Amino acid sequence: MRIMVTGGAGFIGSHIADAYLAAGHEVLVLDALWEHGGGRRQNVAQRALFVHMDIRDEAITRIFQEFKPEIVSHHAAQASVAISSRDPVYDAQVNVTGLLNVLENSVRYGVKKIIYASSGATFGTPERFPMNERTPQRPESPYGITKMAGEQYLRFYQNERGLDFTSLRYGNVYGPRQDPNGEAGVIAIFIGKFLAKEDVRIDSDGEQTRDYVYVRDVADVNIASLDRGSGGMYCIGTNMRTSVNEIYRQLAEVAGFEAPIVHAPKRPGDARDAQFDYALAKKELGWEPRTQLRDGIRETYEYFKDALPVSR
Picture 1 (tube, one colour):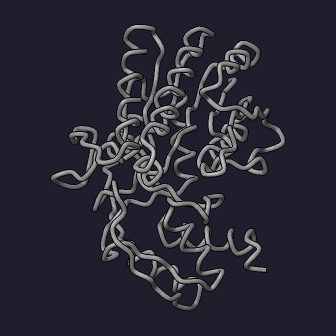
Picture 2: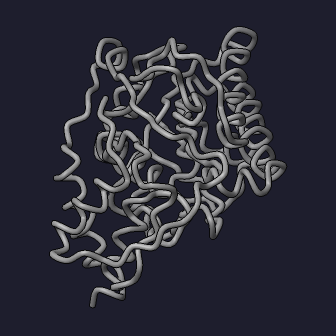
């Protein structure tokens, strides 16, 4: 199949593009390479076509017309909760207006299906755990709001325009290629600090929890979604909660030393806890996470140990 991966030079998108290529598909990566978004040209495999373009650009029409994608894996986004809280207008421009540009062109040029990167941030802080597809969505950040709005647009385009979709509500994705200098992605950020022998910042009391899912497991669910999950929305996680303090402890064990800790206040828009029941994804997509957190952290640490200049 011909697959367009928006945001395919980014952390998650590049692993998905690699998985599609490995499965024998023809892949076009479209990415704005925004400095705060984690998109890097070196993340794009040589076998993939690459277009440097923002999803809001009207010229995207030409790319749809020429490449004629059958599937669009939509991973381009403003994905930082902190940035969305500081600049909700920009967040909506990318995550809503940009999505609509992709959807309109998908309908116009015969795309069969959108695979949409949604987020657990759409839930906010629920009353009970684990979260599943029936959990009420009460987002607490502009980022969560725009991702929830995106899901509603997908429903509209399926019902009114015949464009199929599968929406994947990710937990905290981590792994190689994540930006260690960004504002999101605590595992990558901590690893960068450990390797540079710098202080590690822990917000609040450090007991806030997340459901950490390895990026290659996320790539696997994007493969499974190519021909399954029509009109479905799925929680993608491990059904386990892990605190920031526990992430620090596991990294200290891998690194062989304890980096100094600096405590900071809670960040605006951050939910306290998260845990995702993936039972529906297992039942309907045939997917379940395979990577244990300890193994994933070790693999990610070794990747950055080789990749970051501070480690040489």
